Every structure is written in structure tokens, then in C-alpha cells.
Length: 519
Ligand code: ADP
Ligand code: ZN
Image (tube, rainbow, N blue to C red; front, side, top):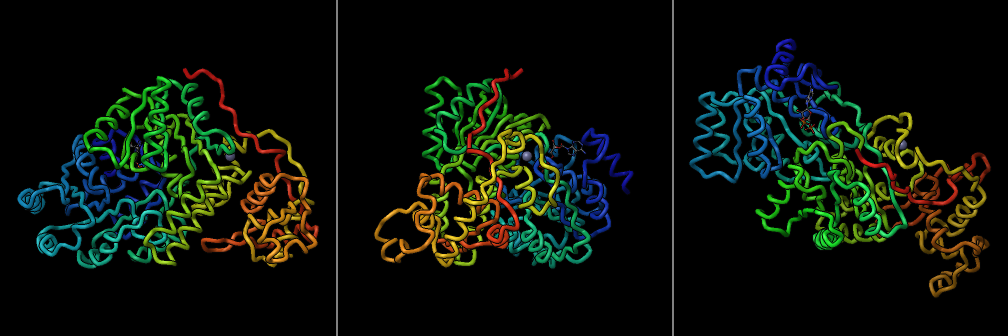
């Protein structure tokens, strides 16, 4: 069967060999197993169900959350010569009936299906007359409450799998699954551990940087001007911000398109098309842009604000360099980004447990912005990839500043946190260390602590940044909740006892943009 799979790969797609993970997945699918494939964006997930759909009698159903993209997806596989169709709410009843009849008559190998359809009794009744050999679940992380994109309609999938029966193969696919999310998916779909196929998550051609303490607009303008002629995406958090940045760039005679949910669908589509077909270099967009967009030559992705978690960040940044060529992923960080996300989580209708989960993810995103370790590795370890060699190309790996011994300063911070009985947040700890005097300090009698004013000579901003660094490097941790308090970890206790030292790069200087002329 595997030889045949390889033949189909050549015949339909023109590829000589499988990419990492594809063969393993396809082999298990052809044995009617329940399988999960975790591969990065651009890793070649679609072929893992498209090839089996050509080799098996029954149809392959692909459950996909992206209704707006289904038509394009189907057009694409049809171009490769695979008979495919889709069913979602955009079709009339009559058209849906036609397609169901076509499926019964064996006219299609592949059916792309919106998850909402799984609960329709009429659909299920008709499906009884159709032989199904594989159910593929795209964006499987939507199934997990702990994922970054939970979709309630995905909760119908386990019941649906029971409905189609045991001998139908199942393939859950995702590019972003933390270990917790992966476990969740496996449990919901009864996928045994040995059938989880996970390929490396590293994207070697991506260079990650975090830029702090710089004027964002100035940075973006400078960057885009220095990279004229190169396609890139600039992500902003809000529609308003997209409009503003777009105008700003246009004013500088930089041709850009914009994309956000507040625009009409035609305007959005035409802008997207101009970007995809290289008629314009820069796209300024909210995160609504990019899902399923197959533009391989994106040379940079700049986040004008910090995203809400690392899953979203890696997915969005990962849209750069799908062709394998060197590309930049720059995150512009400012402390107010944290407050924006805290506010959004707070205002959301999530229950307390899920809110807590969101805060936790946000904290890890913030740690990414404050770490001095390899940025690529920081992301990989978030997704449970074992620690590897530093990437060698990210901002921190190429940072030549020398390390300073900051053990004494760290000890002062730790003893202050301890004296404050691990009951206060970053702001108050900073104020005590720098010897500020205000009503809160007096009210809690914090000015009487022996650690009061220990770092008096330092500006508050430096002390706050130093605490951020200590949190990012896991000497300190922030407790759960909307008003997190600082606590000591075992690493900090070791430092207090003089067992280990703390090293830090001299001062935080943002990476300067290379002046190399793009060829
Ligand atoms: P994903 O869904 O994992 O992001 P895709 O399925 O869209 O990735 O595949 C990404 C790109 O890799 C596509 O252009 C696809 O044609 C290509 N690709 C897939 N499998 C192979 C292969 N075996 N050899 C070469 N290219 C491949
Ligand atoms: Zn690195």
C-alpha cells in the first residue's frame, strides 16, 4: 500500500518523496487506525488525508472550521485531479442534496464538511448510505477547551465518530498543540499514545526578534522601507490600529493593503488578492487575515502588538517563509499590550476556569517577550519539544553583549518579595525596592521593611524590567488571577542561599535592522 501511496504522490502532486511524518501517518490511516498528526504550518498535513482518499474505497470526510476557505480548498485539490466537493451552510438545500447524491454514486473521493453539519439528523440519515473510510479533522486543536481557538461545534465530533463506526480511520491534524491540548484531543477521540505522530516544530528559516522600548511606528516604517520589494504582513490587534497603520504607511508612499473584519467582503477579497498575487508588498491586518492563505514568499511578519498567546503568535509568525527561504518574525512589545489582553480576557464570557487558562497563556507570552534565551527554543518548549541547541539566528542567539553577574541585585529583589510575604504584585514590590512613598505603602506599613529602598538608586522602570526578566527566567512566578502576586521559585531560593548566580545581558538594546540590500 505504501508503494502505491508514493506513486500517487508523484502522479497527483509531482513530489518525489514524503516529508517528515507523512508516510508514518498515511501508513496508520491505511490500517484504519485513529491517528493524530502534529506538524508545523507548511509541514504538509493535507497530503496525509488526500493520498489515502485516493487509495480507499469509501470517501474521506475532512472536517474543517474554515467555511470561507472550503471552496478554495476544494478547487485546489480538484486542480491536482482529485474529485472533491464540500458541504456547508453557504449551499442551498437543493445543491446540498445534489452533492449528497453524487457522494452516494461514488463521484467524489473527498468531502470537506463544516462541523456544524455533524448535528443535522437529515445529513446523518443520508450518510448511512455512503461508505466512509476516513474522517480527517483539520485544526483539531479547536476541539480542546484549553486550545487557543476552541469551537463548540467541534464537540459534536466524538459522537459523530461513534455514529460512523469503529472501522473508520480517524486523523486529527493540528499545527499548534501544547502537551495539554494534545492529551485532550487524544482523549476525546480515543487516539492511543502510540498513534500520535509529531514532527519537529522548528522553522529553521525563521529569525525571531522581540523589540522593546522603541517607537513602534518609526520601527515599522524604517523596517518596511529597508525591505522594499519584499512581501510582508503587519499584524495589529484592533481594526482601528490597522486603519491607522495603513494610513501611516500610505502617507510615506508605501503601497499597502489592509484587511479586517469591519471591511466589506469584496474589499477584503480584492486586497487579499492583490497581496497574494504580488501586486502589493505589504498587508496590514488583524489576525482575521491569513488562515489558509497560501502565499509562500512572505519575507516578514511584524506584530505591531503582542498577541494573546504563543499558539496564536507561532501560527501567525509562521506564515512567513513557507517557501523555506530566510524570513523575519518581529514582535514589537510594549507593557500596555498586557493590559489590553487582560482587559479582553476579563470582559470575555469565559467561565473562571477558562479565564485562568487564558491568563496563564498570556503570562507565557509575556515571558517570551522578556526572556534572554533563544526565542525559537522558548516557543518549542512551550509546545513540549525537548530542549535543543539554540537556533543560532534569533535576536538573542546573535546578541553579542556580554553577561553581567547580577546575583546581588537579584538577591535583593528576592528577599524583598519574601519580606512582603509573597502577597504583592510587581508594582508594589518595585515601589518598595526603590523606596517610593505613597498611601498604599504607608497603609500596609511597607516602608518599615528592611528591604525598603534597597534599589533606591535605580529608576523604577529598570527595576520593573529586571523583575520581568526574573519572571521570564523562572526565578519568580506570578500567581494566577487578574491581580497576580510575585512568588519565589526554587531557583530563587538557590540564589538566595548562594548556590547559583544570576547572569544577565548588560542592558536591553533593541536589534537594529540590517542594512543589507535585498537582492
Ligand atoms: P499545512 O497544512 O501543514 O500547513 P500543506 O498541506 O498546505 O501544509 O502543505 C504545505 C506545502 O508543502 C504545500 O505547498 C504542499 O504542496 C507541499 N508539500 C506537501 N507534501 C509535500 C512533499 N511530500 N514534498 C514536497 N512538498 C510537499
Ligand atoms: Zn535562537
